[in-house]
Image (cartoon, rainbow, N blue to C red; front, side, top):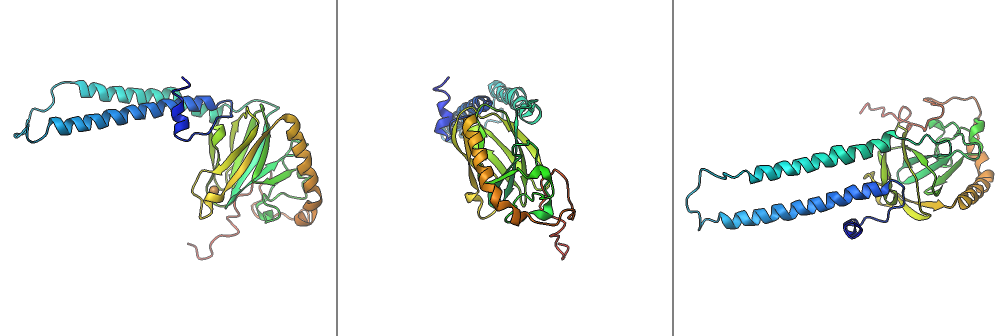
Length: 289
Ligand SMILES: [Cu+2]
């Protein structure tokens, strides 16, 4: 089985480091071999037909055509295999990703907010509760619009392009965008989710191997799309705690001046607990385009 799986490696798939990834790899592996067989089969058939029905051998058209049922059977077999792949494997796998979220108190929750051309990561901090975010508070120094008047947000961490996660623990990432459609893609973890402005879409996975992996944007989102890359560092639990502590210490002195704003001054479109929609009402085109 391992040697058959080399086709994934040959086609550029990086090593898998998530608990569910082997299932994706199996289906990819099967699809690649199946498509390979179809490619060789159809190409061979095409060349055979060119030769077999050449003009020199068939000066007069045969209006009767094929009488055997082989081609019908073959086509039916292909449709059947594809239906089994889709209904038997792909859809159940997909539904597990989008429905079977871990009912796990220990799961780590993180928000990933895409913007041209960076990934912002918002972690709830030691209290485990996300601070309120507001669209009108979003600025260069406050990339997710954390509301300074919310006590839950005091210990929150917001980091740019480098996300640390602990190994062997379920992670739920709420994916959002501040501008256009991005895609939060983790090739090594065999998972990706579109980041859609105005929506907060959860995805989940469990990293099973420590190391540094790519975070990329999987949707062509503008001229700088190619540079929209980050790093996912899967840490041991101890290293993860050390990273949280280090980031908290780094964040502490820098936060106050940038976040200052008179409390109790609600901005337009404030949605408690949600990632800001990308300020759509404020920046509405006066031209009505
Ligand atoms: Cu992007």
